[in-house]
Image 1 (tube, rainbow over the protein chains, first blue to last red):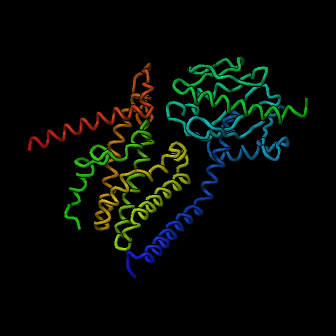
Image 2 (tube, one colour):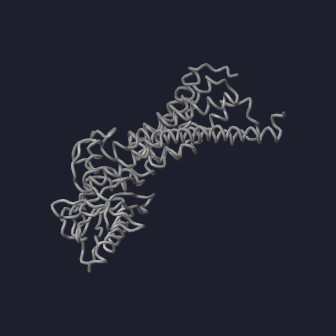
Length: 206
Length: 203
């Protein structure tokens, strides 16, 4: 067969693609379980972080999550809520994702049962610039949301860049210096999540 | 077959004919991924791995590849190795995979890899091609690590996450954004070039 002939070229390209894609599919399915476990762990860790539950290692994350976090009966077909009960108070947990400046941010948001306060926030993944928008994953930024009282409309607002707003009664968080787009998009994302929480948790009871 | 010795190839790829400083290849990632040392190290290790194995595979297959589809085959091989790196990172180093985000996938578009496959592996033996790929990757890595060291030190005040700058150091925000890599890379190329030219004059 002529090496530069069309038949050889087509067959060769086909075989090469077939073999290499086959190997990739193999490697992918061998590691799929491990990858799924990592993703599950990342989610569970974020839930515990947002609830401020302490843990020592991955095994403890798994155990605590299994023991304390339940899927909420307020979940609907489209939106899954989880709940955590501590001293008769129920906290509602939701995974969220939304568009920030460079890509999708996924995280976990926790609110109290009246949807008056944010309990905590943790980020699972983001593609923001390290050192700028990427600072949404830093403790000072996330701690601003801990116990933050919502405005009468049930919202938070994002102030100018700063080093963290420690007043948790003013329904305001500081943005990140040099990353105002990421900061304001995070605000929009969280307010949208708060709306979902409100419609699911307050809608029926009032 | 090439007449060049392994030592000469290494010297060319790392210094005299460095892919970033002299050939100005791989600039996209040099700007995008160099603001922390740890991310840069892992991404460039990925490039070293992919360049080495792509060269090896292209060289082994070179007599079978029809000329008119050789670039498509090279791209396929590059993509193959990059996806392997991506899958392995996701499974075994999820934290790293998370902080690199889409940059691993972007290794596919790194011109150095295809450049070496086309310029070297197509016409040389397997082992020497592998060596050429590895040293080209190392040449790329050394330049990027230098850029990253400057950016991390000035942008965060740290090196490999360890605080170096005294307390109260005002971080330079511009160092965290890609434009700063332009300046730093430009300065590095300028310094390296003047150093090389001095060497040539002395001869």
